[in-house]
Length: 218
Image (cartoon, rainbow, N blue to C red; front, side):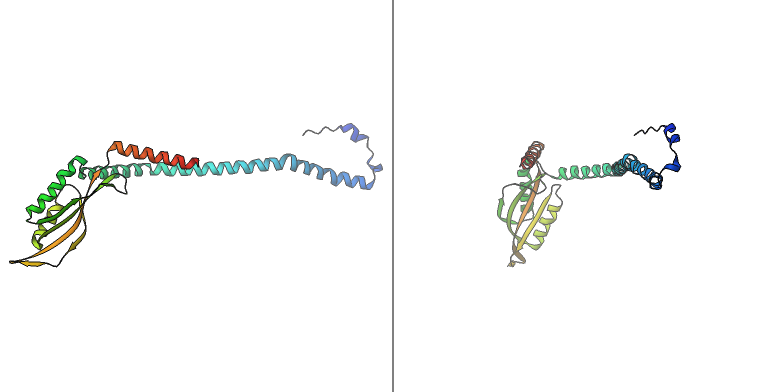
């Protein structure tokens, strides 16, 4: 805002003839008006603008700090990714392909027979997707007869297999004496795993992604 004053007009005014109240008005009123005009037309807008800019600067500084933190952690994250990837590949090598499952189960059965155990039940179950969504579980319910020593040999041989075999729900009945050996009946669940084929993984991921989009639209 630009104010224009004519100094000649001011010189023509006889201050002695100006009433006292007018003098006080000029002395205190004019500076007050100037200050008010300065506050509302200059200082306040600039102050609000400065506050907004400070807020923007603070936000940008926060984003920069977060980005710098991520950049500092990037080498560590890459290293961890490679480690996990290596662990996954090593684990995957221990998982038989689906076409190998029959041979693996036969190998386990042969181990039992080789340990001179009598197989009473060998019942493969249906494969089901593991909660990890990257492998299938293939269970087998097993019942067999044998001595403590023979059973120990069998379970020891299982641990030497290259493939993963989990044993759970082991139940043993009271042993019965046959000749010089104590024969017991044992039942358990054997479980092996096979990796989900890459094509199936892609389909599952696409289906999951599609489901998320539908939920968002609702």
